[in-house]
Amino acid sequence: MKFPILFAIFLISQGIKISNSFTINCDYRTNSLLVIGSVYLCETTNIPTSSGITVTNVTGTHLDGKNNNDVTCVGILGNWTLSFVPRNFSNFFPNIKAILIVYTTIETLFGDEFDEFPQLEYFAFYYSNLTTISSKLFEKTPKMVCVFFGYNMIERVGHDLFTPLNVTQLQRIYFDNNRCINRYVENGNTTAIISLINELREKCPFDDEFPSTTTTTSLTTTTNENLFCTNKSIEDFVCDLKDSMIEVQENLMTKDEKIEELEKKLLELQVQIQIKDQKIENIESRMQWLEEEMLRLTTHPCACK
Image 1: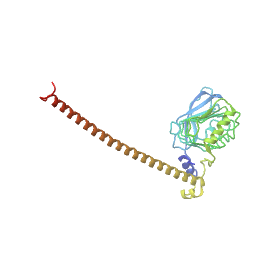
Image 2: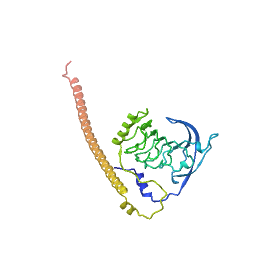
Image 3: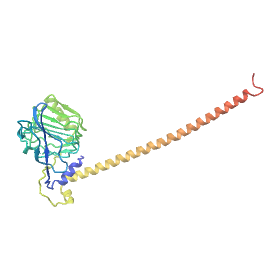
Image 4: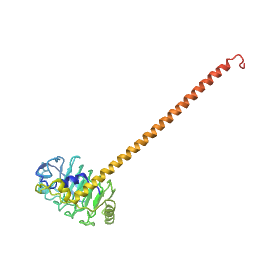
């Protein structure tokens, strides 16, 4: 099983405390979402990509009569530079029931990214580089009614991703335009939703669980060598990465062989063209000789009058 590079980076760095944090600026407005209706939205596009993952301050001008407690939706536009899910939004917006995340380079959802939103009903994560989803993702959000994972690169979905949810209350599930599946249900049909979940388990199998992504662990002195020796997940990842590199190398060699074969065929074609050109030249030479002979015969004193 091949894991994203982001997983390796996370595993190697999980013992390091990330103390940096950042402020986000909200564009506040009202919006309407499918199924759950009107929401008061904080939309942000200014998330730094190198200042840690914890939100420590929120700025922006609320609409008249509104405050942080009225915010029920957070929209994050990653601009194809965001590689992590920001944490700590709930400290500023305690009533979040919808999250929208688009245009990111995030490859993996490890499972605890949204534990701080127990009232979450609507989750949309699309137009990103997402490949892997842990079974734990919805363990703390049992009220989910809409799930959107369309237009990603999904290859692996946790076998029990939807187990914590009540399938009879799910209204919409989107997994369209992904690598392992291209399907969605939007009519609240429980039978169709169960069928889609079973298809995910068949076409996008993933049984492994990720360790916690908590980033407040004290700095350790564990060497990379010891870490790889004692952590089976990393060892498996390294083996899979090695296999992937070998596979890529083999594919490149195969392509080189195909290129060499094409070059050989091109050379043979060039030789054939040269032969044909020579034949044409010979024919033209004979034609010229015939024309000269015809001219000579027609001008001969004994030629037919």
